[in-house]
Amino acid sequence: MASVELQNLTKRYGPLAVVDDVSLRIEHGSLVCLLGPSGCGKTTTLRLIAGFVEPTEGNIRVGDRLVSSPALTLPPEQRKMSMIFQSYALWPHMTVTENVIYGLKLRKLDRDTIRKKLDAILTTTKLKELAERYPGELSGGQQQRVALARALIVEPETLLLDEPLSNLDANLREEMRFEVRRLHDAYRYTTVYVTHDQSEAMTTADLICVMNAGKIEQAGTPEDIYDRPRSEFVARFIGSSNVIKGKNLDDAHISFAGARLRVTGAKLAAGGETAVSIRQHDIRLSKTAPQQKDNVVPATVVRQVFLGGSRDYMVEVADGTQLRAVTGAGEAIAQGSAVFLHLPAEHCRALTG
Image: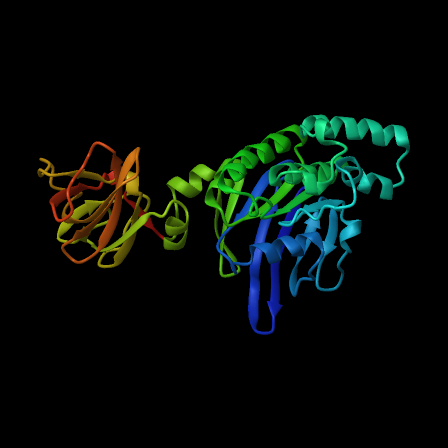
């Protein structure tokens, strides 16, 4: 295992910086997710790490080795890395066993060593009963496990995954998220995982790096990213937070839609304007006015959708801002009803980015 360090990494195509001055240290044995929408630079960053793309500026180090710079780029086969692609890239004419041991044969390991390694990885990935089948005879989830087994059996220093679950249906994706994490915990290879799916990142990652326009917008644990977003982009992308804006009244309060809101997360600048995030499930709805005055906003129900275990509301406040709120299934409030929104101060987070 080895750490991976990106130092001021930049990749330009003409005037466009697809990856823009990215610096990141990935500790050995950790699983880091590069998370973001299409076009944010996450896959290009992964391809730079793999050696498929040369950087315009900056360096990549793996342990003590410099593997990429504008002057020198080691080819992928010399980086001691394994990569798993969206398409799995299995040989259709080879059995599961033949696919899994392909990398060991290239390394010319002896038969006994190959057999022992194969037996261990097939057991760990739960593929023993499928060892003699061909990829066309496997489900998507089984093919994905074969791709993981093939990548892990060569004992790479670094494991790279490029949206590996995107071709699976929703139920298989959920199952495989936990499988990826289980295998990581078993082998503890330094892992870089690219995804646009928030749930995948939250389930698998030790560290999430949210990318936007070629930059890392915020890096932190899943809890940090979810509970303490620093920018509007992160707040909206992770958990689809409501983002409201109000004029600063003092260092801890804003004025929003005629109401006074206490916020947390940062001291506010006098006379300025601040964006504040609040999660949908943290908003409380009531038909009667609460006794407290702060953090209570009158609103009107624009729509209401029953989702089985919950209800999803869209409400509109006096200044025309619309917010989403999720409540228990038993709280049925008709469209057009006047309601009061309680926005708890501890969940109103000032965004500084």
